[in-house]
Image (tube, helix red, strand yellow):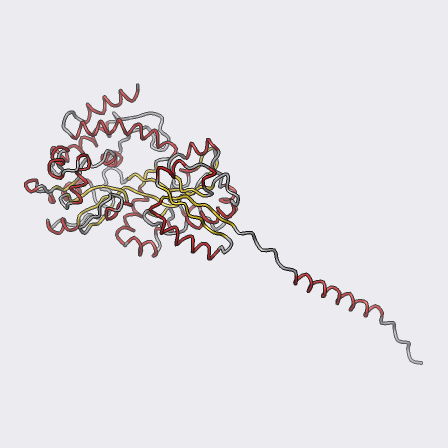
Length: 417
């Protein structure tokens, strides 16, 4: 006899169950995926950068189609006074301390730890720590404005003076200024005293200090011997070397009142002057430089140093979508700035930055960023108060009324009161 066939119910049942599972999966796939809710980020920034941020907002939205950047251009005065409910993301510089006291900002540490794409080590030394308080980071650096030396290429060519190099010294600087100067026709090598901050740059180059610690000042040190030496050297640019007019001579030659030296620069009568990196071509002066110009680092003495100000990006504590805000500021920190130097080495060393800024400006930015002394935003008010006293000292010394030692000794005594 032949063996009796086995029941096939078990295999049939398995096929039925498999079919039901497949039907369920198809039905599930047919269900519509929930559409993400659109996100809008209100972004407050300096109004001069509107076209720049408009282009970046468009590029960001292509990567994040669900996110819209609502641009809020503001002048600096308004931008510094904005509070938490005025925007989701701020460009910050001044008043960081006041914003922290009000609880306006959200700590960024969660994202800084979790976001592997955000490389802290790529940021220039000290830029991130500017925005770290109480063990937390409240903003990330995006761009830096460094003080640099500008020069009139037309005047250098006319006087057959070699252009300054990145590694030039105080001696090189005086040599160039002397060869540019012809006081008989109102032509000068340097604009000494164009701003009260200008001699500070030479003080730090010489190793002097106005306060005991630039980042965490506890007392003024205006009578520091190196500070006195540096200011005496600076006054010598007028009274010994004759490469700069006195304040009175500048007003007579170039008019413009307290801005007479700037008028001398614009009129092509001064060969060298200091200003911010962002001032290129006169764009922050209110008047375009009509001559061929170049820029270089500050001449070095005992140290190679310059001052710098950092623009940061912060997220409001009232932001409804802080995760999207982080994506936006992280994206911005990797872009070539519109008018400042990058806060990231990778950006500063990129071909894109060199193409935008030009080879000379890019090289000066990179060298200056390595030398920069960064003033913390939340103690700027202290420096402003000190600045009023320093301005009086500079005016007295450059007018020839008193020596640097007399003026600084008196100022230190007044500061201690």
